[in-house]
Length: 256
Image (cartoon, rainbow, N blue to C red; front, side, top):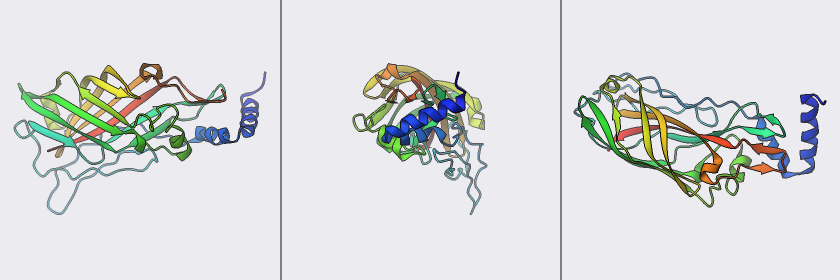
């Protein structure tokens, strides 16, 4: 039986014969990208100062948050219309394979090209998100390898044919009063997710927090590609993608 290093060398040599497939194989050696996470709660900004935190992007860089509000949000100021704010991120996470060998890290693509609004109302001592609609420009997804991004224009999620993904909330989301103090709370987003031209009703486990002048929501959803009619990219049977992927997002909402 061949050792794993020997098998890897053999497969790479075979891929070299395939020309373009060699570049795809190189994707398997990307840098590890940390999962999205809610930033630490920012202190209220004083005159002449701003508060910021970091979020990892697909390239491993960080993005700064908008300044925290000098006046903390409370149950009286939150109800109303909210819109997507700067530094919101949506992306995918998948594991690629070289023959039978899994990549060392996930392939991750992300974008900040997100639009949408949410409506929040008072509900007892807490809050209720009564409506939300979000849209993502899938053509702007970027990973650490441009060749992967180009491949996905016509393969896998086929961003050229399906340039937009949307999510519409179909059931109110209750946000407990503890979120007003900056605590992270668990919520479930029940709604319709449209991806690759297919709409499915999903329950997305998420966390929410009030952070300065923002309401921030973090969520992930892992699903089989077949749910959305997506064929996992596969080049010659040597370079492929596992048959499921993860949607991840960290959304900042600001009062409209």
